[in-house]
Length: 410
Image (tube, rainbow, N blue to C red; front, side, top):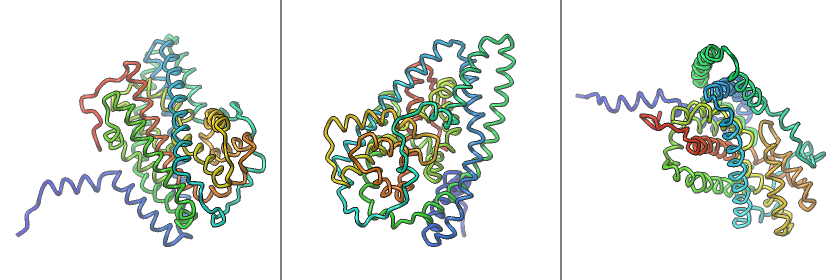
């Protein structure tokens, strides 16, 4: 005679109806398909790209509505400016710290002390043939859609504060905001397909065999970013009496989407929504998170600094303390241009190496094959870093309201 256990049935139902579970299954299936049938795996690229393109449609409206409603609801324009300045200062401090950590880890572990004769060489001519020698803010702005929406939204929010029908317009925008987030909720049910397609393509095209020669660099990057997340960002959150483990658990579904797609963009709208549910004010979230996606790239900063030192070690190029400071100074500026455009990280690396005049720019060819497998670590670190930034600014501005059920886990 068998008896039904209500608890086990409840657990099973919660599991099979949980988006996180299906994204994880999709990632595993994508890896297996890409490994055992690379040709078919590469054809799955269209699925991953289509999902990301669909989500990107929502990014503009969500950023615009969140910022406009946040500024219009705040009323105090001086506060808007203060939050913006605080955010940029915080971003610069944390990303500089990330650059220093990346360089330090590279010198301690020395991932470049390997035989480069066994490394696969990819075509890097599009990055090395005419590398930029300086950072262009206009090009950065024109190629960064998130930043463009951010600027337009801030202007509209300020103008709306002085409009005589302010309350009526806010009510309309608020209703539109609910509609957009509701539509996004349904789109996110496609996340497993997006993760499957992106992971199958990555493994199918690049293969695990590319990881072996550069495995030391891979392990160094992942280890360093883990230390940054749990030690640096964890310490920042601990100061505000929040556990980094609880925060990561709270964002587990979004983090798996970032892992599967190798991009933090698909999870941007959900991050903003969850930060608000957690207690951060709409105005702070609207200003800090989109700005952070352009200026607070902790994972990218770590990777870029490590990549420069890795190539110096690979070619046995000694760097003086002054040259290391120069690298940090250059990357403090140029790393901001590594957002929003595919391959921009390599352009930043090429321009940095060109400015130093010691490390061969052609060394980027060794990184191209394995870079795709490190993009997950960069995206996850950037994603968590921007969530932490919003919490810090909210707490600092006394704009954090402890909810009745903080960080409810899905």
